[in-house]
Length: 449
Image (cartoon, rainbow, N blue to C red; front, side, top):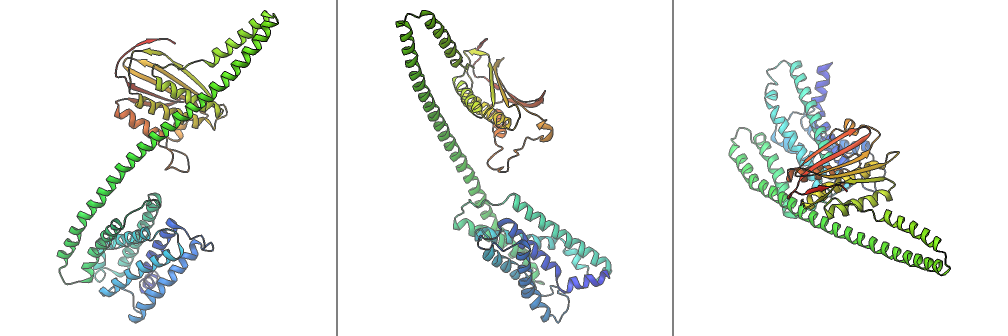
């Protein structure tokens, strides 16, 4: 029974169909159907692909071989197999799936090259077909085939997880070079099969040598793009900071206008009371107004003006979002710290704390700042209802859009590492606590607020 199944498996080259379906399924997973093909479902797409491949591959070769097992006994069989594999999967993906042509062809060539590499690794087993007992050989052959299918599915999932961004724009030269590298890699693996009996090692070496400078070129362009992206992000961050300053100044201007209007009304009211001779009412009114003004004028003073501004801005944002926000600090005279580094760390920690508090029943954020023996010590705490570290030890972002979120703590760690600082995160008594220490550039003296 087992050998009968194996004979059917070999006769109709079912391994080729399965590999082709995995390639087609990977393309569907990566790109999805076009909008005008709303009727298209995964199984429909795979069925179309399988029928076309069977007609083009088995429907042509099996009659030519007189119904015998589809064993690649001729170089032409290899060429025809790879032509069907690449062209048909590329054709259906371009016709029915979304996305650009280049990444589709790139994914196809990578998967096909992987198939050939895998078969090259299993070549010693295939050479033993005539000498090994038939049942044992069939078992090993099917086992290695299943291994190939698992690897191809794993590659498809890897592409899905780390796919080439659709927004990436590559120039024509780079695309041609990348395709040449993939095609030459595939050709270098196929040559020994296509020209059996002839030493093709020199030609293979030439192909590999031609790939090396091109690989370096791609790598060089990649590093240049990373550097350009870093510069762009810095420029964008600067623009955002300037916009934040502008918004803050507008808020202050509006507040001053309101305070001036309110002050004018208060003066007018006091003038009316004085003219009426009601000095007790004037005294009571003044005491009330002075108390209100004192509450509004509560200042945050950490000894670093930039940090005072950041804390005040985050406090306003937290209260606007319905999050209780408290600040405790020890005022320090005569010390200097890298304000950009301290601001980056504190701003990201406060943003994380405010954002994490939004889902809590009683949201609350506490910020504590003080000077400790040559270090600026900061602690940002937010109330939590569960141990987030136990549930998420690496504190990865839980948002769906992981590319746009989850950088806050990474930026904090990187900034502190660059400035020989320290970071500690902990959950204690229902609070998530992130504390840091940043070396100061000039020591100072502490005076209690």
